[in-house]
Structures are given as structure tokens and as C-alpha cells.
Amino acid sequence: MIIKIVNESNNPLPEYSTEMSAGMDLRAYLEEPVALKPMERKLIPTGLYIELPKGFEAQIRPRSGLAIKKGITVLNSPGTIDADYRGEIRVIVINLSQEEFIIESGERICQMVVASHETVEWKPVEVLSETQRGAGGFGHTGKN
Ligand SMILES: O=c1ccn([C@H]2C[C@H](O)[C@@H](COP(=O)(O)OP(=O)(O)OP(=O)(O)O)O2)c(=O)[nH]1
Image (cartoon, rainbow, N blue to C red; front, side, top):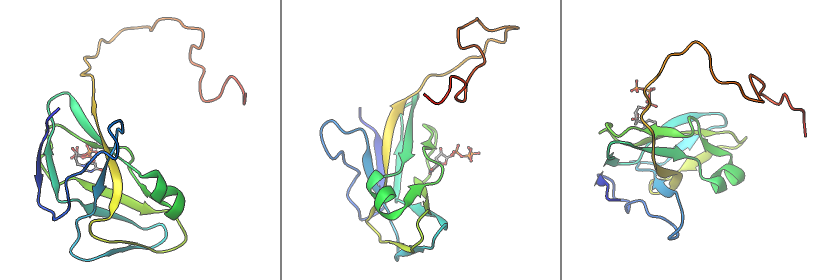
């Protein structure tokens, strides 16, 4: 699919790392490096603005490498970019490690997945259909 994008940063447009990958890495767009202290969260600009077609969303997700090596993740993961949003894509990152982490401009801080979604109409009813599980959940079948 083709998606309109405005890139006000000097970073390259987001790219898939392989022909079959789902996520495109997004880069920070900063005037100067940003320091994240342990447990600190910050909103990081990307300089990107997109126009998604109706029925689609973009999800902002952590990069696993940054998460395992540095404890850096996306706080509201998956962040939702709505099809009617015309503002800058920004990323809420949090440092869950015990060391300060410095984000440089141009650094790949998260990944974005474009996904289709259903549009729901509610049908209020008195009862729902019966199933074997019923209301059981949250591990009610035991550990294994
Ligand atoms: O990680 C994110 C999440 C959201 N947004 C932008 C795009 C999205 O369409 C808009 C609103 O996001 P969301 O619906 O999650 O925010 P809200 O807290 O419910 O605010 P609103 O009342 O503006 O919908 O903010 C981002 O740039 N990054």
C-alpha cells in the first residue's frame, strides 16, 4: 500500500529490514541528544507525519534489542497512530534499566507496524452465548 508521509527530519524514511519484516524502525529527530535517567520517560519526536487510509492504524512498538540490552522500551506499547491523526509521530520511551541512556538524533528507537482494523457496531443483548470456558480466565485452568 502507499501511504503519504511528510518527513521534516534529516533522517531517511522508515524502511523494512527485510522483504518479510512487519516493523519499520523509527528514528529520533532531536536538536541535541536526550538523556534518560533510570525509570525516566520522555516524549521523543520523529519528524514524521503520516496519512493512513481509513481502516488502518500504525502501532508503535519497542525494539527487542534495545529492550534486552539497554532496558529501553515504549511505555504505551503498542502506541496507536489513528488514521485521522495529522500531527507528528512521537514516541514515549522509558528507561527501565539502572543506567542512564542517551538517545542521539537519528538513532532507531522503536518500530512501527501498519495494521488494518475492524470497525465495530455494538449490538446490546441480555445474555451472551454459552461456551466451555464461560467466565473462567486469568489462569483458572492451572499453571500447566
Ligand atoms: O505513541 C503514540 C501514541 C499516539 N500518538 C498520537 C497519534 C494518535 O492518533 C494520537 C492520539 O493517541 P491516543 O488515542 O493513544 O491518545 P489519547 O491519550 O487517547 O488522546 P486523544 O484524546 O488525543 O485521543 O496521538 C503518537 O504520536 N504516539
